[in-house]
Amino acid sequence: MGFALSNMMLTSSAFEQGGSIPAKYTGEGENISPPLTWTGAPDGTKSFAVICHDPDAPLVSVLGTYGFGHWGLYNIPSDVDSLAEGTTLFTSGASDFGQPGYGGPMPPNGHGIHQYYFWVLALGTVTTLEAGLSIMELLTRIEPDLLGMNRLVGTYKRD
Image (cartoon, rainbow, N blue to C red):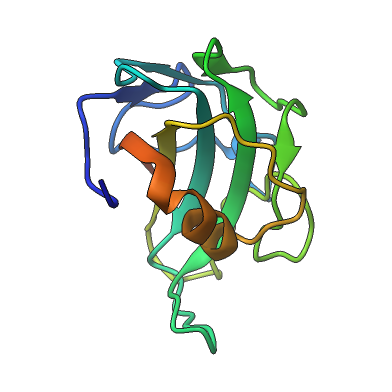
């Protein structure tokens, strides 16, 4: 299928689509992941992955990727349709902070508003991927099994 939007819906009780992410979920706050809920997984879904990416970060890696990876979470069973605030369940990848788990928004001071894309990806296989994958490694590994995906975009600005 490749990476294309599907009919899945991703929402959070913490912020609306296009709305401001509360400081609690940022590097300036408690630095915990927001609650997320998804619906409309395609038939045949056997697992999920969730990522958070800031494409507004002015960074390009030697691999040609852009922006900043804040979270990769995977090996999520198909019977799961939500993640609790601050979840530590499932398998964590490495954020671009160089640590496993969620690293909340924290754009440079005075850099303006950044958009944070939270993605849910439905996969046609049960994944047993090892911990610590970068977002790019994760996407490369799961792309052949992708059935559907969608995103929730939140914003954050530091003064």
